[in-house]
Structure formats: C-alpha cells, structure tokens
Image 1 (cartoon, rainbow, N blue to C red):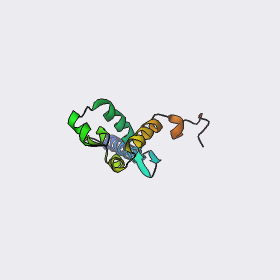
Image 2 (image 1 turned 60 degrees about the vertical axis):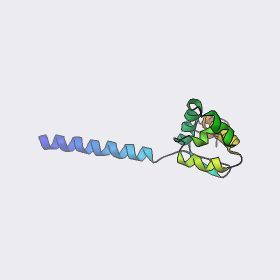
Image 3 (image 1 turned 90 degrees about the vertical axis):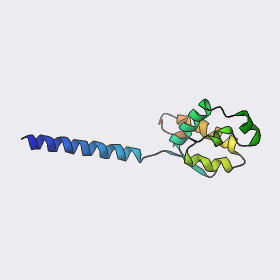
Image 4 (image 1 turned 45 degrees about the vertical axis):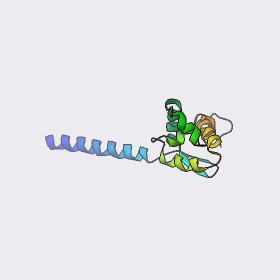
Length: 113
C-alpha cells in the first residue's frame, strides 16, 4: 500500500516537472526591424534601463546607449547594439512590450488579429 502512495507522489512530481519545462519553452518573441527578441529579454531591458547608471566617461566614449555596456544585457539584445538605430529600436521594443494590444495577448483589443 505504501509503495502505491510513493508511486503516486512520484508520478505527480514527474508531471509537475514536465509541465514546468513545457511552460518554459513557450516564449513570446517580438520581431522588429529584422531583429527577433524574446519578450522576457525586453522586460529585462526595461529593468536594466531603470537601474543602471554608467560611469560618465563611458557615456562620452560610445555613441551606443549605455545599457549596451551592461554585463546583464540579454544575449538576444546584444546584436541590436551594433545597429545605427539602436536607441530607437530599444525604445520601440520597450513600447511594444508594455502594450498588451501590440502583443495581441488581450483579445478585447481591436487591433489584434
């Protein structure tokens, strides 16, 4: 009887781990001007922009936004730093990520298809 209870718990644990792994593989991607980035990366970008203050010398040395030099910048955002339009692309991605209708996650939005 005890072995059945253990088997039942083990089965539940395996199912829970499987569901967590499955949920982690279903990422939302944003495509903009030839770049494809994860929504989660853009949310991290928002956090980085709000919390990181670079040294003043770094701002003078580079035409890139200072967040491009942040060590925690997600890998899928780094290629954007090589673009001449990096500041406007980052701003557009941040705007898209904050707009549920733009992402079409809310079916009540009129622009979503």
